[in-house]
Structure formats: C-alpha cells, structure tokens
Length: 93
Image (cartoon, rainbow, N blue to C red; front, side, top):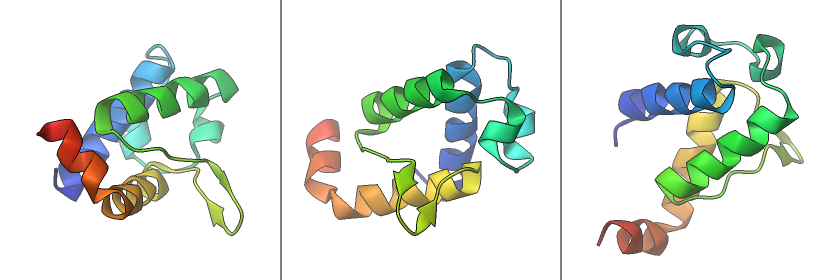
C-alpha cells in the first residue's frame, strides 16, 4: 500500500477507534491525536485494528520517538512493515 493510501486508511482506523467522534478529515488535517480527542481506550482500539488489519505491532510509547500524529503513525507502520517482511508476506500469501 502506498503512503497516501496508508495515511487515508490509518485516518479511517483512528476515526473508527473513536466511534466516529474524531472524523477522518480532522485526522488527515494533522495534529496531535490526543488533542483531537483520541483517549487511551481509543489508542488501544487503534493498536488492535492496526495489528489485525496491517499485521504489524506499533507502540506509542517508544523512548526517543513520539507517535502522536497520523504522519508519525504512518512512518512507524512503514518502519514496522520493513522490519517484518516475512510477517507481511505470510499475511498476504
């Protein structure tokens, strides 16, 4: 999935994780997910959705790396996919 499509899909997952309280358009606008209203339960739902759909684990609390925007999240997912190519192949093959 190219970066633009991944960014769109992540924004959709964020919105779904908040039960639609945070619209996709707002997520795509950038800024802090927490400031938009994504609470700890929403973050847990988002992590589960990313793991289920994209087959990678993303941690929000990594020393030296703050993941609090859709763009940071897309970068983290891309890094995780590159680090786990066998997992990605197994999930699609």
